[in-house]
Length: 282
Image 1: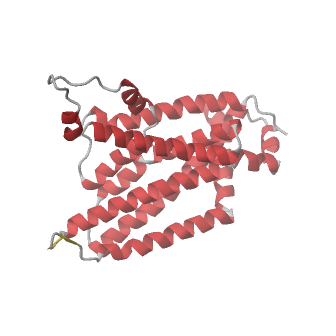
Image 2: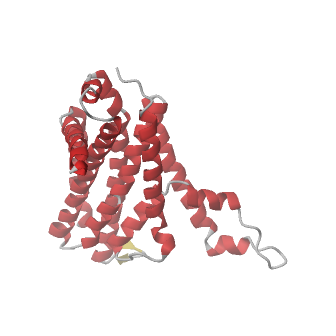
Image 3: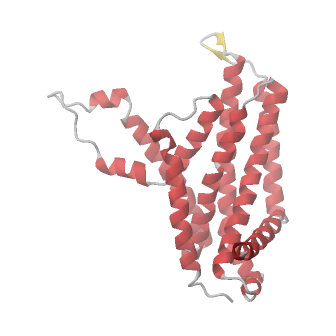
C-alpha cells in the first residue's frame, strides 16, 4: 500500500512531463521531419544495386537499408532526447511548475524520478514509433519480416535512459547548451574509442605490433581501460542492430555494453537525486 502511494506522484509527474512535451510545437515539428525522412528512404528498398557487375540479393539490400535506417533513427532520437532533457528543469522552474509541484506533499526524489520516467517513456515511444514505421515499410514494400528489428528498438531504449539521466544531471552543473554538447561529446568519444579498439584488434595491426623478436608489444593499458570504462552507447546500439541481421549475442563481450549502460544509469541516477536535493526551488 505504501509503495502504491509513493509511486502515484511519480506516475502523475511522468504523465504531466510527457503530455507537456508532446504539446510543444518544436516536438511536433521534429516528429514530422523524422516521419518525412523515413518515407523518403522507402525508395531505397526498390533500388537495383550492383557490386562488381553483379546485382545484390534483395535480402542483402533490405537488411542493409533497414540497419542504416535503424542507426540513423537511434542517433537522431538520442540527439532529440538530449535537446528535450537539457531544458526540462529550467522550463518547470521558469513556468512555476517546479515550485507548485514541490509545495505539495511530493518529495524531490519523486519529482526527479517522475521527470526521468516521463522523458524516457516519451523518447522510447518516439523511437519505437519511427522504427516501427521502418519495419512496416520493409514488410509492405519488400515483403521482408524482421522480428529482431522491434527487439533491437527496445534494447536501444536503455541508451535513451542514459541520455535523459546524464543530460538532466549535467544541466544542473553547467549551462544547458554545454550539457547538450557534453552529452554529444560522450557519444562521439565512445564511437572513436570503439573504432580504435576494433582497429587495434584487427589481424593486420596485431601482426604489425609483433616485435622483431617475435613477441607481442605491451598492450596500451589506457586504451583498454577507456574501452571498458567509457559509456558504451555505440556498443549497445551495435548489439541491438545484430538482432536485425540475425547474428544475435556472441559471448559476454557482445553483451557487456548493456551492463555498462545500465550501471551508468544507476550511478548517474543516484548522483542526480543527491544533486537535486541541493537545488534552490523558486
